[in-house]
Length: 181
Image 1 (cartoon, rainbow, N blue to C red):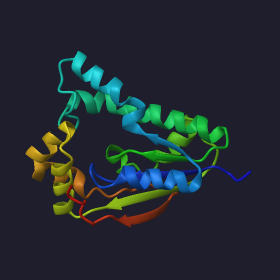
Image 2: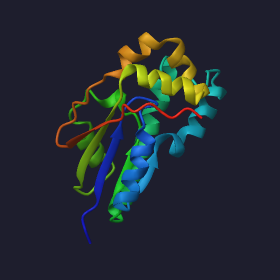
Image 3: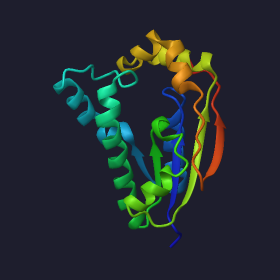
């Protein structure tokens, strides 16, 4: 049996992370773990129950302090279980809150008992104008704050650089505009 691998697909909302992550999972026979599918409904419930907008995570301090860490801990815990079973994983999440921590993945691997897998980080890159068009066209409620505060959103999330150590980085330029139906 081959040693399990970890593929982490990162990029801003609308960059094409999900498409690339699902293709990667299929290509490698890996478990596909999407942060929003793993914990999104719980986060929306918690935000609503505490009087917050369930679609605004970028400007919500309550979310960033209390729920975001739980989302990522849950995702990494589920990844660890799969890795210990010998199953490679593909993680689909922005991870931007952790880009500035070079030891983030080594700490997570230790905390959630990952075997020593090879880790590839796939950075999905997209130009600002293409990203804005994609978010506008997909029309999701969770993108409304981003679009209404575009300059603030782009300066905070659009060009974040990941400083993680001990990983292999692979860039994927996803600049093609989405087809219009």
